[in-house]
Structures are given as C-alpha cells and as structure tokens.
Length: 202
Image (tube, rainbow, N blue to C red):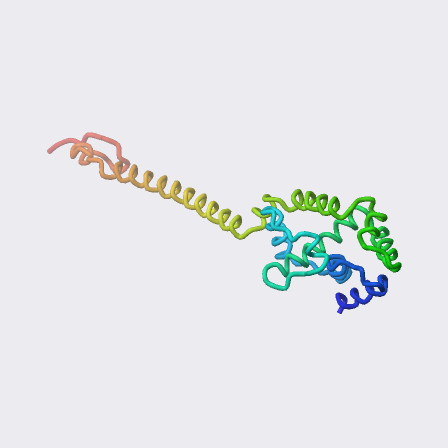
C-alpha cells in the first residue's frame, strides 16, 4: 500500500510524467521502507562482475524477467539512497518540484545536482564497488559459512585426535609397568607393604 501511495505522491509532484523509471521506483521503495538482503547480494554480485543494468535502460524499463527484475528494483533504490546520502533530501524534493514545469529531466537533474547523469552513474558505481565489493560477497555468502564450519570441524577433530592419542599413550605406559616381570625372590620375600625383608628359612 505504501509503495503504491508513493507512486501517487510522485505523480502529483511531477504531473507531466517526465520521470525515469529508476527515480519513480526508487523513491517508492524508499518511502515504503522496502529493502531485502537477498537483493543487496544481487546488487553486490552484479557490481563485482560489471553486470549492472545501465541507467539509460532503467530510465525507461524495469526488467520483468528473473533475475534482472530484482536487480532493476534494488538498483533503483540504491540510486535514490545515494542521491539522498550524498546530496540530501532537500535536493531530491527540489528536483521533483522542478519537474512540475514542462522541462527535460536531464536538464532539471543537472541544474539541481551540478553534474550530468553519466557522471552521476559513474560516481554511484564507484560507491557501490567500495561498499559491496568481493569482501562483502565472501562474508555474506553460504560458501563462506560452509568453509568456516568445515574448518571448525577440522579443528575439533584434531583436538580430539590429540586427546585420544595422549590417552592411549598413557594407557600403554601403565600397561607396560603392570606387565613387568617381578623376580620370584622379590615377590616371595616381600612383606605386605612391599618391603624386601628376608625371612628365616626352615
């Protein structure tokens, strides 16, 4: 519901409809508080492999086929987050207000942010690469936690092996001592305390 109401709000702010799809969908997701971790992972993976959807394409279309549909939405949200974090909410509102007039979006964008869309896209991509690089992918993937679990099990196995080996060695030493032959004379003439006291013969 919040998402759809956000679209209505955006249309009211810009009645002429010259709004890129990424801006429309990104603002709607931002206002609705929509954010899913699995889509962030898709964004990180696409960025690391240079497979992000070009901004020119997202201006007109959000891909509808999997997996690019999710990527298109998370890119749109990420672009809005970047605009707000770098330049503030006031400038975004100023951009929407400027679209109330029948002017070109690119001209309005350059007027508010003092850079063109190509430069904005490059700056955003650089930010994404730093924020969601291979380190993020590694630490957030199932493969990483599988390897951690394997290494933990190996460490436990090694510790158990050492304990068992030490216990067996101790048992072997005790067994050797108990099986040691005691001379008959020493056994026969020893008292109950084990002292070798020689007794008188008949």
